[in-house]
Each structure stands twice: as C-alpha cells, then as structure tokens.
Image 1 (cartoon, rainbow, N blue to C red):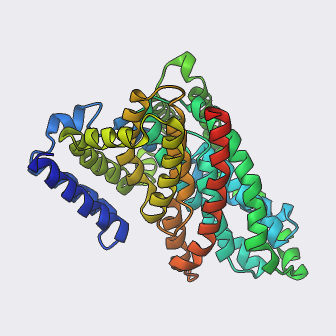
Image 2 (tube, one colour; image 1 turned 60 degrees about the vertical axis):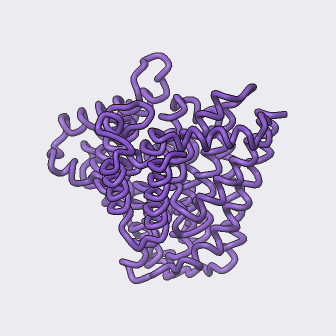
Length: 428
C-alpha cells in the first residue's frame, strides 16, 4: 500500500478506537476522522459528497431522517404509553407476562420503526409500570434492548446496519422480509424462553400492586386521537410503499421523506416540533463515518482487503459465509455494529461480485452477525447504549457487566441458531 493508504488506515483505527472506548463522543471522533481524511487528501469533496461508491450514502441519511420525523409526530399522540399500560393490564400485573408482552411489542415496533427510536419510547414507560408493580425495571430494560436488536433485524428499516447493507448491496425492503424475517420470528420465540431462564424465575407476584395497575386507564394516555389516526395512516402508507418497491420503484429514502413531509404538512405539528425530534447527532455520525470509509475506498485499502478475503476463502462460499457470520458477531460485540457494518459493506460487496453461486447469502450473514452480535455487550449496539443512559438518568444504573452477562448468552444462542439456517437455506 502507499504511504497515504497507511496514514488513512492509522486515522481510521484511531477514530474507531475512540468510538469504541467512548472516551470521546462518537460524533466528535467520526467528524474528526473525516476532517483529517479530507485534510490529507485521502479523499476529496467530490468523492466524499457525490460518489456513489466512496461518498456519504444519502439514501441512509434521508431514510433515517424521514423515519425520525414520522416517529417524532407519532410520539406526540401518546400511543406508546397506551401500549405499555395495555400490556400491563393484559398481563394481569404478573411480571413475567408483562415482560413477554413488552418484549414482543418492542420487537414488532423495532421492525416497523427502528430499534433506537423504539427503546427511547418504550423504556421510560417501563419505569412507570415497574414502579406500579414494585419490581426492578433492570431485567425489563435489558430484555427490551435485546428484543429491539433481534426484532430490528427483520426489516430494512429496523436496525441502522440493515439500512447500510441494503444501500450497499442493492437490497429491497422485501428482500429483508423474505430472507431475515422468518428466522427472526424463530429467534424471538427462543428469546422468550431465554427471558424465563435468565429473569422469569426471580419475579414475585404482588396481588395488591397488580390491582393498582388494573385500575389504570390506557385510553387517558392518548392525547390526540385525530393526530394518532393521521400518523398511523401515513405510517401504514409508508410501510406499504416499502413493500411495493418492485412495482413503484421509489427508494425507501424517498418514501420516508414523502411520508414525513405529508405528515408535517397535514397535521397541526409544526415544522419546529417535527425537526426537534430528529436525532441529529446520529445523522452527523453516519456522515462522518461514510467519509472515513470512503477514504479507505479511494486509497485502495478496501480493494486490498477484499482481495485478501477472497484469497483466504479460496472461493469457498460456505467458509466465507460462516466466517463472516462468526466474525461479525464477535466484532459487533466489541465495537458498535454501525461503524463495523459501514466498514465491512464494501468488502462484502466485492466478495459477492467475485464469487459464484448464491453469494447474496453473504449479506444475510453480515446482517445477522452484526445485528445479533450487538446484543453481546453493553456497547455492541446503539439501542443498548441508549437503554443504559435512560436507566442511569432514572436512578437505576445498569453496569457494563450486568448487561453483558445476559447479552453473551443471548448472542451466542441466537447466532448459533442462525448458522444452520443459512447453511440449510442457501448452501446445502
């Protein structure tokens, strides 16, 4: 490699280490790394901002932006609080039944929206219900974070790594439904069983507390019914457009932006309110990350890594698939799965093009490994970090190892189940 390529690798690794260690805010690390890449001419303005292969992936940025605005408007209706109280009453105040319902709601919402937004909305309500039942919210929060990562794996919009993979691999919303969602349903059934083994046996039922929860009226949580129906209608149309992409030929990013625009224009929500709910740091982080990875593409680093990966697997698709699944799970447990997938996607794209047979399985191996491996540790996925932050702010801190001791079990079991699924469906 050239001297510039080695310097680019060094810059990237330092930024990556800062992101993983959390000693510097990840946005600062990503922007700093992107700035240095531009400064040393590892990439340029045209490549960084306009190149399809080495620039900022605007499809990812605008898809997230549109969905954040839609969810921000939906949040104003109180529908998430409604669902939490409804779940508590349907569980008859029994803690494990409540956990199962909240976990399933979280998984479903994460598939339709995205896992970070879902835990932001579900976790605060969990504190309310757990306080009424006089049980610790910690097991619920840990289970919800893991359920969001599993459920989010089912769709293109459910987990940020999936959005990156779809954009890089030219995959549609329906591709994820067909190839990822069936296995995610199986994994959720297994995960409910794991919740019983890890948490359920420690719960105690308090009849008096349960009666107090049963007295709550979930209908009071809905603050604006008209806005709720408007929001659900737009969200339904957006999801339908995602599914009908092969017919309509509109990219998910365009659909999400159109949905957000219609929702803001047609409701009483002001532009300022809608924009205020956008997670700007997340979008800026993605932009910086894409510039850094693009610099590695421009300097030839990604191409050399791809050649090395092709040589290492010697054209054996089975070896490449299982190796990618395992490596993705392990590495996503150590660092956030978003920068990992952003780095690996160009490499997997080269492997898919260079290989023979059903090479698309490599994308599913990357997605499953990154999404499920993110459950292994407290810093493996953005949803985990968000849940720990909410817990700390509410006076119920969850330590790194408190989360990780359950996360390692969940990640190991789910990834182990995915391996035979990929083998039997694509490679046998």
